[in-house]
Amino acid sequence: MGRKTTEKIVFNNVAVLDAGAKGVSVAKAPDGKVIFIPNVVPGDVVDVQTFKKRKAYYEGKAVHFHEYSADRVIPPCQHFGACGGCKWQNMDYEKQLYYKNREVFNHLKRIGKVELPEFEPIKGSDKHFFYRNKMEFSFSNARWMTDKEVQSGEDFEGNNRNALGFHIPRMWDKILDITKCHLQEDPSNAIRNAVRDFANEHGLEFFNPREHSGLLRTLMLRTASTGEIMVLIQFFDDNKEQREQLLDYLAYTFPSITSLQYCVNQKANDTLYDQEIILYKGRDYILEEMEGLTFSINAKSFYQTNSDQAYQLYSITRDFAGLTGNELVYDLYTGTGTIAQFVSRKARKVVGVEAVPEAIFDAKENAKRNNITNCEFFVGDMKNVFNDAFIAQHGMPDVIITDPPRDGMHKDVVEQILRIAPEKVVYVSCNSATQARDLALMDEVYKVMRVRPVDMFPQTHHVENVVLLEKR
Image (cartoon, rainbow, N blue to C red; front, side, top):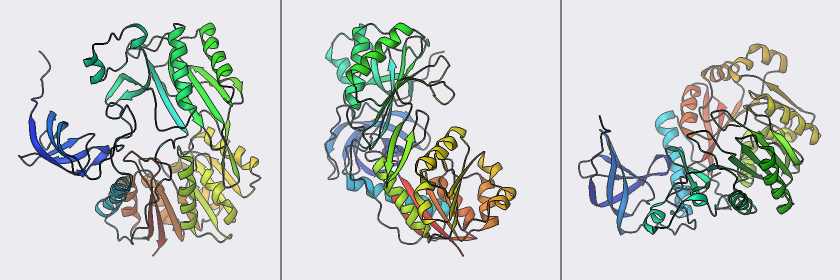
């Protein structure tokens, strides 16, 4: 039986009303259903062709523009629309900040249902482009063909079918070849393009994600505010001669590379965390600097991907904590201990807890490098480690800083915070919806005193948020 095809409907002269979730915009169909439309801006008036129909909504694409929004700008990136990143690149930056701020407010109000103070102004980014310090690209021997390329009639065979770039949204095996990305400063583009060109010229096989074959799998580039650069290539085939051919070329062509590393990964997925990373040239880490503190970043380290805005985020966190130098601070989900060390100068002692052993190793090493003696770091699953015995051993905190993953805090962690009830909790979140859920659980004991969103990712819908809670 053949696959059922979705009826394609065209709605004419549709006004785009709002910015919705995940970077798409929202309109209303004549029948009252919501239409989700990518690559349009609130205020545009368009004809929409649907490609998905559900009980409560449609998904479609704009096929003709009748009017352009006053908030629309020209995207500088040639890959906009085909690439799944930077979905708001066609929207004025001040309007981006407006929608991000509103999203945080709506989540805290509608999901959290807590009393809110007036928000402090969202902290925008001075850099609207070229702000990321980490990028990951994938190789493919069957590149995604854009509409323009398909219509050109050009022959895309042989090396022209190879790609080094980003996954197409919802298509795990399709890679868009990237010529210039506006997210990471040079030499990022130069290195990526040089790797692709060298591989094509020398017949190095690009990865086939369906058959799990080929030499070249992924490329990771990390840059630091210090100017240091890390390059890590993930190979699938274990071909020493071809591997060293490419790595030697990179080392010679880009002598500014601080850390040149690789791994051979033949498992089903391309995650690095369970892989042996091998140093080829240089050292196995790069150094990041923030307010006189130095942090080593290795291939598996977590570090905020916008270095400039990370400083703003941590400064707001420290300000919200209102430390005087006498406080015992717990930093939950401490990662590599960057927030812990950043606030340590204004605290009596900081205790950091994190589930990833490698991150805690980095945290301890960084503390030594920075001559910080009032920070201690412990590894373990937060819901198991952060218990009465741990608190009895390390002391009752005056302030808790928590920066959990997107899923928010485990309910056992929330319950423990409520049980010990420190005077202040500073909650840093990359997902204001789960943050709002946790604030609702804490509302009986804590009142929200300050809120300030921080834009870490211009041209996208993502936003961080910092909340100060004080005991009622």
